[in-house]
Image (cartoon, rainbow, N blue to C red; front, top):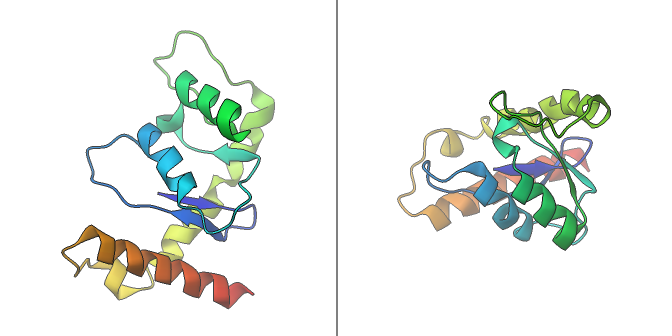
Length: 132
């Protein structure tokens, strides 16, 4: 998982096994942020559509979650105005494309997850240094 700022530079990254749902990983990733100040809004895909996550992020961290509604949801919770920001989600995908430039991250050579996370954070550091 990755959290970026509005210009597409990484703020926080995290890794987890494939069977964990993204809703449970959001707060862990925000805890591992590189900076102290969190963004006011988080934009995610349909997997982040959760009333509990919205309430927790707003109450504990004062962060608004913007995610399109799941098609199976009976009561639509997002209106059109916040969802306009969803169009800028390509900036997060661009960070993943930048990380694909590092061969060590594309082909995971490390056995331990902590070592791999260190290399992902190192890749994010290189991305940040290139843009500053």
